[in-house]
Amino acid sequence: MQNSHDILEQLPGYIGWKDVNLNHLGCNRNLANILQLREPAQITGLKDSDLLDHTTDSDLFHQKNDLLVLKGNVLKGFHKSSAPYNGSLYYFIKKPLYDCANHIYGLIYYCHEFIACKELTNLFEIDKKQFSTNGHYCIEAPDNVFNLSSRELECLFYTLRGKTAKQAAEILNLSKRTVESYIENIKNKFGCNTKSDLLLIGIANGYLNYIPSQFVTHAI
Image (cartoon, rainbow, N blue to C red):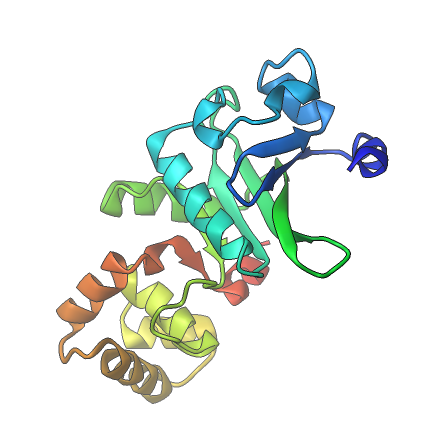
């Protein structure tokens, strides 16, 4: 990564990379500075839990995402930071690192401060108040355990947040009957019959932490 590191130092934002055991292999100077490391090399061998900005919630969120990336997924999302980032909202992307034999030997992540629009700001505030969420979201659902379609994820996103089928239909530019059909499909995949069970299963399986790409496009 030495030659690549010279290039990464020229890029804005915060960049780090890890091995398959989720130990850091390096970072750019921007990340080292905000983590109060004297040199980027000081991050080598450290896990997220060893860093200045860690919390239990953020460690669990990022560890789950890192493991998905090590399976070949590319993740994008938003997280509301803790100290020393002063509660700023950050956009992040994580990708696998491949060797010359096309084997995954680690991952690289990039994040930068994001000036949130009203929709995203409201989402963070409402979810924190209603569900005590930790302020971390992935765009789409890489760990989609029930194999929900994109439309089903969109409908579930709004249903979990108390929207009726009619309200979700208006937002998604669909008919009320179409949204109701998607909700029934989700119930079948969840193996439940009631809306209350749908909500419980959806929350228990982490679907609160997924933002449909359409919401993000609309919000941005």
